[in-house]
Each structure stands twice: as structure tokens, then as C-alpha cells.
Image (cartoon, rainbow over all chains, first blue to last red; front, top):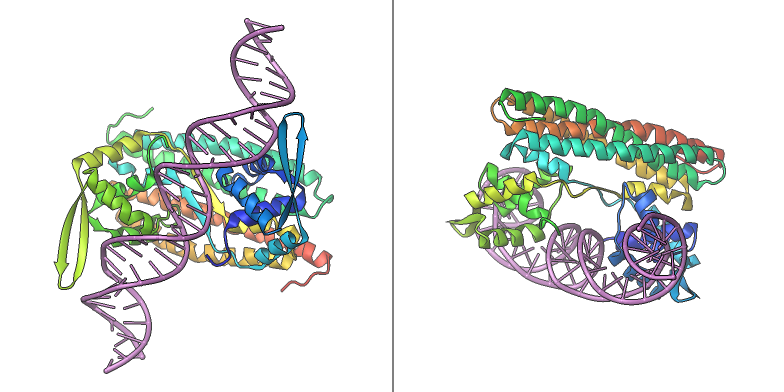
Length: 189
Length: 189
DNA sequence: ATATTATATATCAATCTGATACATATGTAA
DNA sequence: TTACATATGTATCAGATTGATATATAATAT
């Protein structure tokens, strides 16, 4: 592990923008980072503790009524750590698509099954594309307000271009697979 | 964990085509599955032992000279297990792109750094695209020989379409970022 | 002859996921 | 108003995975 775990930097990156609780960090990751990076509570909360021990973040405990709330703020040392990581070369870009796995091994079952997987994939991508296009539009309106917005926009356009390519592929893949399914007299819907 | 770990099915899927050693399984995954699925020895060897205990695969030990060689063959029960999994819906398709992470948080450093990450990404994709196009061509020549070849071809065309979209995006992203970098008087190469 | 690469199996600390547990707050429908 | 569902919030853990490392032999190149 050349430059320690990525989770450290994702959290530092989010906190560099504004102070947040672990719960809010998770929400951010699910919404804006969601399509190219994921994390679970099981990695967020322990990492926040570690970052606090390293003094890369500080903790502000609030208690309004009964519910406790732990808000974390990045320190100057934390920002330095983030910047050092940004300078390091990218170690790994990884795809892990179960849909492609089921397509790859699809000759071990009916083509109608594989077709269903592709159709579900297509629908999921179509829905996510709507979300990304909405994000693109709202980011374009606030582009001049903050430097970071261009960075956010570029990740969103990456998603849009990619998802559009997926959808084009889906049509082609469905055609070729359903043609074979018909030829073999297998059931398709 | 609704339908147990994926590694089981990846190995069963590969063994459904032909008997192999753990080392060969790893090589296959690095070459043909590599762009949408990865695995390390640390998950392959233990999984092979588990599959053997479950009687989904059988072991043939060979010893030519000093080096031992453990070849695994799928059983009818193993094939049934694979087919059952192929029928189950896809649980998760996941992207994990560190390049996008560094782009997203790029406003915390010089744009020239982010530009370098995108340029390296572009180069990597360009090289992988050459490999995929070669695979596409050789699969098209043997398409009629085996049913599975269409399945393999479709995963390859997925990669090609996706990577082409990435490259288009790279040009656009570099333009927008370098324009800003110039505007701010920052160093770019 | 020597060094490097390829074949081959195996383990392990560090890490991460998915599930679960717990507790409070807020909205909403009966 | 009572009950139910959803949202906010922290935390842990078994099981799965990675990346590194160790070990050994075979083949190929220098």
C-alpha cells in the first residue's frame, strides 16, 4: 500500500469543503460521488476516529435534546495531507460490473435470462442518467460561483458520456442476443 | 449476502469452459475479465478449496518433476450452482475510479496536477483500447465456432464503446481545465 | 554460467462491505 | 392522538478481498 487507504482522502476531501457528521458524509458519497466511488458506515466511522487521532480533523460534539451529533472539521495538517495525495499518481481505476460477468458466462444458460439482465441494466442506467443530467444543469448555472463547481461538473459529464455509451451498447447487445435466441428457438419476451 | 460471494461463480464460470489451475484462473481474469472484474490469489486459492469441499469442483493433482500442479474440474453440481446464480438478478455494478476522485477534489490543488492525472488516464485507456480492438477482431473471426464467443464479443464491445466515450471526454475535460489554468496564470505544460 | 521471467501454490495484515443494532426525530395517515 | 414509517445519527462485526510477500521449480535470455 504505497499511499495508505483511499477512504482517508475521500473524507478529507469532503471535509475540505465543509464540516460534516459521518452520516452526512455517507449521504454525500451516495449522491454526488456515488456513481464512481462508494463507502459504507463500517469504513467511515472508524476512519473518522483515525483521522482525529492523526489530528487531520477535529471533533465538535453537539447535543440538541437526546440525539448526539459529531461534526468533524478538517485541520491545516489534514489539508496538507489531502494536497500531498492529490499530487501522487493514480494507483487504480476499477470497474466491477456483475452484469458483464453474467453476460460473459451467459452461454451457460438461456439467452432470455441474459437479455433480462441487460434490460434491467439499461433501465437502471437510464434512471441514473436523468439524475446526472439534472446535476449537470444545476452545476452549469453556478459554474462561476466557485472553482470546485467545474471539477464537479467534469465528473458529471464523465458519467453522462459513459452512460450514453452504455445505452447505445445495450441496444446493439439486445439485438445480437435476441437474434440468436430466435435462431435457437429459445423463449424470449 | 443474498447469494454468497461472487468469486465462487467467477471461478465456476471459468471452469465451465475448461479445467484449470489457480494460476491459470488468475491469468484468464487478468486478460479477458480484467477490464470489468479483478481478483487476487488471496481470494482464488481459498475459494478453490471451498468449492472442492462443496463438491462443486474436483481436484486432479499432477506432478511433472518437482513442481506440483493442481488442476480443477467443474462437477455437474457446480454447473447447477452456476446456472442458479445466472438466473438471479444482478446485485451491484460498481465503478471505482481514483482518477475521478482526484478530479472531483482537484480544486484543492493546481489544475496542472489534475491535468496530468487526466493525461495519464487517457494514455492508459488508449493502450487498453488497442488490446480490446484486437480481441474484438479475433473474436469476430471465430464467432460461429462456439456460442460463448458472442458473449465474449459483447463484453469486449462494451469496453470499446465505453473507452471511446472516455477518450472523447478526456479531450473536453482537458480543454476546460487548461482554459481555467491559463486564466488563473497557473503553470501548465 | 547467470539473471530474469514464467509457472505454480499459499498465507496474512490491513481493509472494506453488508448487515445489524440501537436511539431519537419528524412526518403522515387512521 | 396514536401508531406507523421514514429520516437522522453513531457504532460494531463477521465475512470477503486486496496487495504484499514467501517459497520453489522451469524456461529463456544474456
